[in-house]
Image (cartoon, rainbow, N blue to C red; front, side):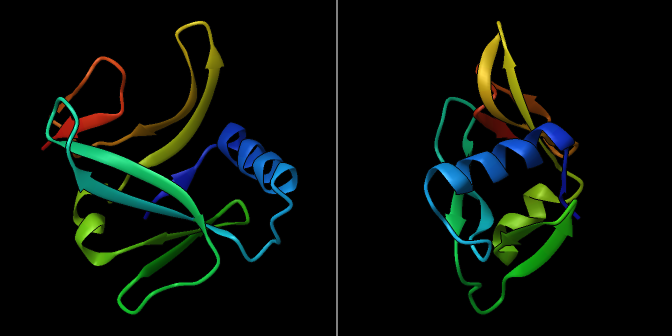
Length: 108
């Protein structure tokens, strides 16, 4: 399962409204190769699921994840920070053995 904090939920709803997206635009979370630690998170709105996707729902937010990415993301929490140390979505991933300083890439 992938969970969402209240701050992330509020920011997702705010971005949907700002971009005038309907409620059927879910969050797609994926893992791609790259970054200084080897793997990077990819986060985007997506209005449809693809064959083989896993769909999770937390706090009314639907999260779409392809099966390959799911192996790296199980148990991850999506958070949002707007503090002095950086602003944006953050992934709290218990599977990551190492993360880069910016938090955008990781390794297992």
